[in-house]
Image 1 (tube, rainbow, N blue to C red):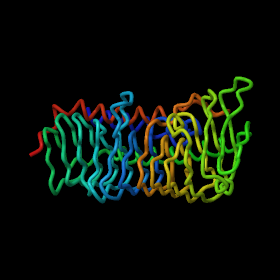
Image 2: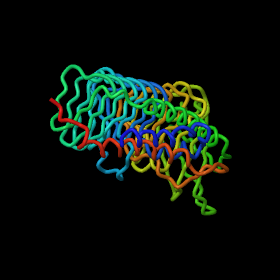
Image 3: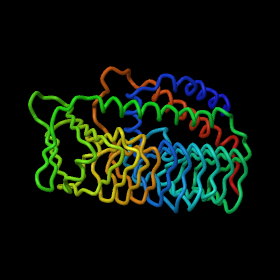
Image 4: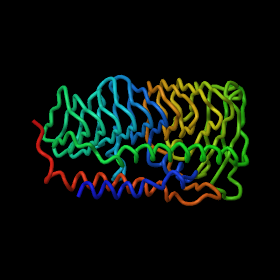
Length: 356
């Protein structure tokens, strides 16, 4: 049964890269709290779901910290295409994990009934009651089942790893397309810069649900305070040009609710540094990012050195990208990995043995 479900998942995954669109990228920002298209080095935490397109490294880090506040989903709290190294990674609130490579760092499963699938070898895993851990290679080091069932040496169907690579390819294409599409939107409003403060206050005339601002990274150095007045707008896009930027501004009134409604689109950036708490979802699919405080919203980087937290909520606006189809590719991707999880759960009682 497991093989048939995994093969079915592969049928969903195979055609996706050719059909990715900007709308798929927008759906991805709603699904994941943090996306790195390449490597993630972290010693912090993510409150929602995380996708790592390369390797996950760094000191001990935490995932799905507030996953119990999110709607139920077949999408794992942590997905890593490559290897997991460094300090132990904590999977919270039934997070589960999907890893294409090996896990050298170890996982601590904090919460029952987690599904963990590892394509390569694994070591130093602390399980939890009712969890199912499938390891494609060997297990070594300290592995405490704690009531979990563990299956090793499975030589997982090649569709498992190829599916993760296909998902990364889809995300790279769709998120770059999304950034380019947003950058092409005509500005509807202008930011007001007075003294040390920038005020984003979209016009309330016309009943529109989308507001668009445009500025460049040089302008970011002209102020140290940011004031946002959403004025009832569902989605506010701030397009920021320039190859690099230092974000060290204070958000007046705090950052609450900005992540769900504001997208900062750094469409040209290759280097971004955040030193203070930042409000709004960040779309920077070409940038190497460094964060030292929290970001409240979805965050997308090419690579990230994460020393600050990624907070919920993720982008939740009703905005749709003009002129592109609905996110069928993304829905197929989620369905495919959902089938994998269903197969693991269905075969758990029948095929898995309690860990020693």
